[in-house]
Image (cartoon, rainbow, N blue to C red; front, side, top):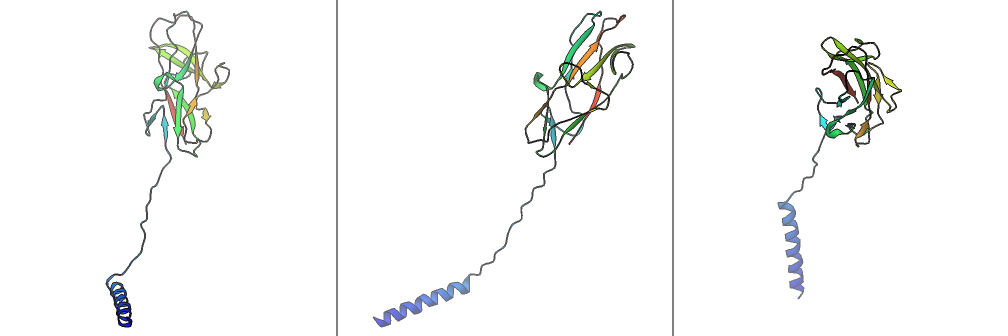
Length: 176
């Protein structure tokens, strides 16, 4: 029996030595990288230029109206929506319009040819806080959830306005 035990031990030792001689192990690692840059979406759309920040529609009034209120609405009929990367602090600057200063009674103007309707933007629904040309609305630091921006407008009627469609285009920039 001693011979069988000795043979078994020698056989096991031989197998162990043989397997060590046949297989070597090399270790290492894989480096994985992803670089994320800060980004924002306006009303659900991303990009770097030509974004639609919304529309200010004063509705339909007769040519003898005294004032018309409106709100800037984004896509889907709701208030403007800004979604930015977590940790960023977005700010919206409402820049110049096409017809700024061309009609007394407002800092901005809607135009129909050479006829103008004065209007202003406001940051409150009571329309007491005027948002001047180039003024900025700073939002809360983003948590990765869309933020609503309420921006209001008021147009003021004046004597002698002919019927027609009056429009203006205002530049807007988002910084984050």
